[in-house]
Structure formats: structure tokens, C-alpha cells
Amino acid sequence: MQMTDSRTIAATPEEVWAAILDPEVLKQCVPGCTEMSGSAEEGFEATVVQKVGPVKATFQGTVVLSDMVPGESLTLTGEGKGGAAGFAKGGADVKLKAVEGGTELHYDVEAKVGGKLAQLGSRIIDGFAKKMADQFFTNFQSVVEGPQDAEGDAPDEGGDGEGKKKGWFKKLVS
Image (spheres, rainbow, N blue to C red):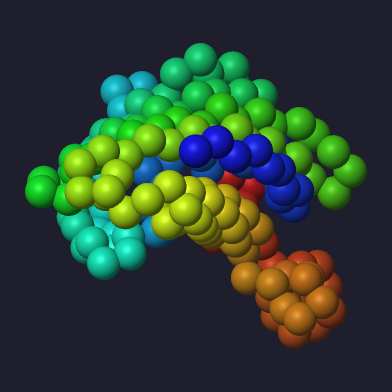
């Protein structure tokens, strides 16, 4: 399964870069992630619980970051083993580009599965993999940008109309 997409995140490329290297941010973004540890330099270890069709499994996996060009691009490569359910592995090439209003995050994702999961059929697997990738990058955008109101703006911090409230991550790196 291969997928390409992009989204604009209301943050600078430096803020987006810092977030994608942060294990706490990644833990919040990976659907079903119960544990995440490690570092960008040495890789991350994660535990993810997911249900694919009738198969529910706990995956123990690793994520390695490579080909890193700070503030511009990187490759995420992951592999998880779910015991009798099988395995999943894949990667994403991520590119960041400064645009008006923030950063355009472009990604190319590739995923493969084996074991019982592969027996479910390509339509179920492809749909699940696309949903997981979309959910990860939607969650990532939400964490980096912070809470939004109905118009898509961050709520006022003090209710005085002065300035917009930044997300917790933006406060951390600002």
C-alpha cells in the first residue's frame, strides 16, 4: 500500500521539526499507542494496540528516523510484531516546506503486512493503513497547532481578545 498526501500546519518548520522528533508528541499521534520511549538519534520503541477487521493485536515495534535534514525532511521507518496476528512494517518520507500561514508537511507512506493480517485481503488492509496514516498526521497537526475553535482559530488565552492561545508544544518551543 502506498499513499501520498500533504497538509498545512499553522507552525514554523522549526516547530514542526521539533515536534516530530519528540517521543511524547509521537505517542499522542500514533493511534492506539500505549507506550513510547527512546530518542530521535537512537530510534523509538512503541507498543500499539489495534484492531484490523476481526483481528485485534498488541504490536511491539520500533521506529527509526533516518536521512534527516533538520527543518526540511526525514524518513520514518517502523516495524511491529503482533504475535500470532502477524507483522506490520512501513515507512514515511516526510518533507517540510515553509508556506504562507505555516508549514506544508508532505508525506509518502508505504506499508506492508504479513501473517494473519495479510489474509484479511488488500481492501481491508489498504483502508486500514490509509486510515492510520491520516489519523497520525491529523493528530500531529492538532498537537502542534493546539486547540481550535469553530472558525479554526485558537481560542483567546485570557478572553481579552489579545492574541491567540498557542498549543502546548508551541509554548514549549516559543
